[in-house]
Image 1 (cartoon, rainbow over the protein chains, first blue to last red):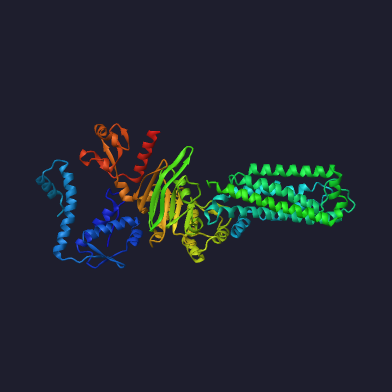
Image 2: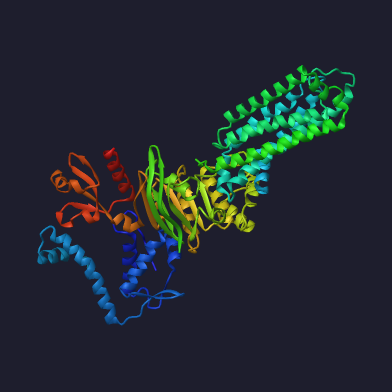
Length: 123
Length: 218
Length: 284
């Protein structure tokens, strides 16, 4: 599991954690059954507060990406390829909704956004 | 309370002050002197130094942080001072024995160091304690005024006692004359002095505790 | 379980008062207690430790009333006002020997393991220790008597950035088992951005806000806009600064309408403190 926290980012730290871990799960880099480090241990390693890690883990659980076994810890959930796609789309849509609001504030139409996106999207 | 006492003796009281009684007591060997002064050196030198040390080392905050009660804090601090007082009077008494043997033919103008005189010394220290501690524990911090008042009270007592001792032939006879050889009289004056000392230190303790309870630790 | 439960503390001085101060710290977490100098941090801490006579309110530590169980609780609390500043001419060894007798759960092994971990030489005199080492020494003392709650008044002030970072690392290590809780006051808010779980903010003797850190920051918005926009929101701002390009101001999130088009960001702890102080100054 790779995590890089930026303190200068505008994004709250728990959000960064959530995004990075969920991406790794959805890309299959973290296989199902992978055991996440205990919350307090992770907080210590990452030098962030306990609550921050807790929030990120809770968010991952809410999205169905991990599950908690009482007394044992948190594990990456098992899901079928279909489910994985669904969760991936959900997660991406959430971010898109935020970005869409930003594009709208400039008065861009959907086509214009798609055009621009095509230009900047790396192959 | 024992731990607090050890704390004061190990950290707060410079070992020098435990040697002081031996040095100051030696002043008893000055023939025919005003021997009240020997005990007073304790008030003038040891007391201010010890209190200054406690304040400079931030002792009040230090002690408050530990699991101890306020009455125990007062009890320990007073015990330290009382131990030193007894040490001072005790060693002076021993030197006094030598004084009497060394100068057998001396005519004493002031009180001679017989047992009865030490009874008066205990009363003087009793008065000192009665003023010092209750005044000090109003703040547990400012020792100057408490110490000045206590010294003044002790001096007033000593002056009056000595004056009466010279003026009144009865008193003079009691302490320096024929009474000096009467062991019963001498011992009972000493005993009375010690009783007054204990009682007044106890009263001082009670008032000090009551006042210290109201003190806020800043 | 609550490690610390402060309820409605009130303390009246002629020219300052602590009004209705309440906050709670859950066991196993770190709480930063922030506020400008003179806002009431030290008075609050001294009230918690039963050093002052309260005009109202109650302090509960590890479930017990502090006023009633002071001696018992002091066995389980460690505290430090800055670094250790007592009997500075004595050796650490001497001071420790005196202090350990007061604690029933004192553990020499723990003590020596912390000394070596903090690289403290017990034959040194207190006066020879740097500020950071003094704080570490008081932590070693507290931890060796088995303190479950650490109350630290300005432990990081006067430390250089390296020593501060080191100390914050230690704080995090201490809470890792979830047994020890830490309340520490500071006016250096960058200390808290990383390691604190909860923030309690005091200003002029009143608790402005006490909550989980992100929630704390997100309950305010820092606005940036033109002078026209300022007029729209002026009366709802906590305070603001004006310059020739426009204004910057702090507002409670609930008072802010995101559709207003004013540029808004999540403020840092420092910004929150500054704008509240500005508001207080304007009211005086």
